[in-house]
Image 1 (cartoon, rainbow, N blue to C red):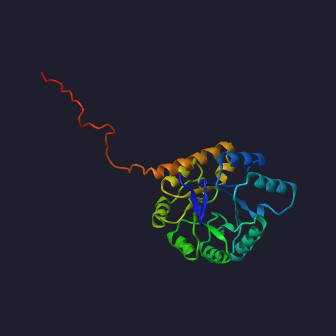
Image 2 (image 1 turned 180 degrees about the vertical axis):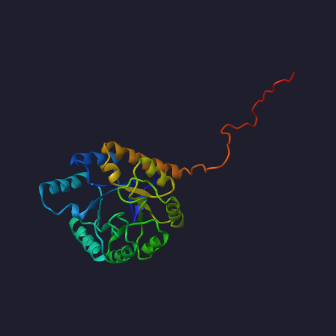
Image 3 (image 1 turned 90 degrees about the vertical axis):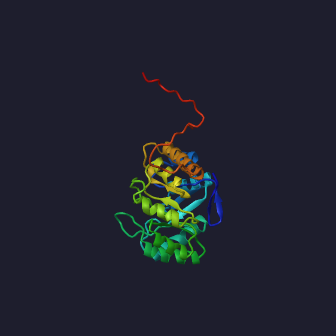
Length: 263
């Protein structure tokens, strides 16, 4: 399985894992150790209190030694997202940012109009922006126009576990933006969902709720990691195209035939 490349940097795995909502730091540690993700997403607002729990979380991030992808979760305006991103760069010491700019409190759907403006400003400021967006082809093209080199389209609303809701639009996005790294972010609930989008040719998957909120997060992290790898391998193997009608798997040419005599 070839490596994931984003903004010229290569990563050995294609699974990205969130760090929120785990039942304990020990469970988070074991889930991450089991899944071996390419990056860990961390919300700046998750930190900053300076209490013992926050320090323990910081210590764990350093122990795990996995690249950090800060995000702007909870932001609802361009200025708020840009300010949060700059704070995250200082706190985490990285130019990478997962840009989240929410337009609806119920669906947590990205505001694609403000997202483009925020992405443009952050890219001008030297950030490597991974925007959380919808599967809308035109919105994605606008993000590419302002300098984004990779995108994170959703499969379904955050935490819904619905899997791919609009398969046609997501597959069309993959087809039309064939050279752009696309990481499916949000809405996947089962390892089979992750395998499906990887089989379609998506470059990676980002998960949080599906693992952290399961009854057995460590097992689920392992299952998703295996599904992502299996889906990628299947894509690279060029799966058999679906067809109507049967086709024998055993050749009949050269095989003996027996005829029943008629009386």
